[in-house]
Image (cartoon, rainbow, N blue to C red):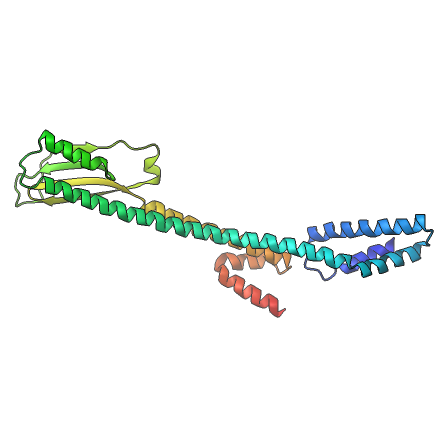
Length: 263
């Protein structure tokens, strides 16, 4: 069946399939032709050379290869489309999380400022913090993002820079499990009307930045892999183009696509 083998090899001289796909497709075509050949030789007593020629001519009429390659290309295009969509999804998720956590952080900072302002208002014209005022302050803080608060009574209301060593009021909230890992903390404060308030409150600014960097990096890597595999599939020096995609990303791919279409 040398003639059949030579014909099959000639069919794949100008295909865009990679080596693995060529081997698999050849095996499928060879199995199909060999089966037809054996049927002609053993069941219809057709001579060897004539049987091979008949099998090849019938195969051309069936257009089996074209249908098989069309199906293979369809699967490959679907796989490449999924890879491209995954890279875009990574970028979309990263950007979405960034804006989400950034918006939450802005609201948290605004809330901290509002709570601190309301407490300094409660302390206005007060010389000390009694139990009723302390309960009211604690109630206000429990609904806020503030983790710690120290309140000082300034000895000299005209000198807002100096404060006593010991605070008049201390508030400290326990951390949730793993909270320091996904949250960041910032110190703030206000001095007014003879009182000084120092706070430590949480926000997600660092987490937002991490999500953005991680999303962009994930997109960059998955896009580079996707584009390099496509270059390999098209037999366009995947190693060289892989470096180009890694360094220039979408711009490199646009140049790659233009040069491929020109060829």
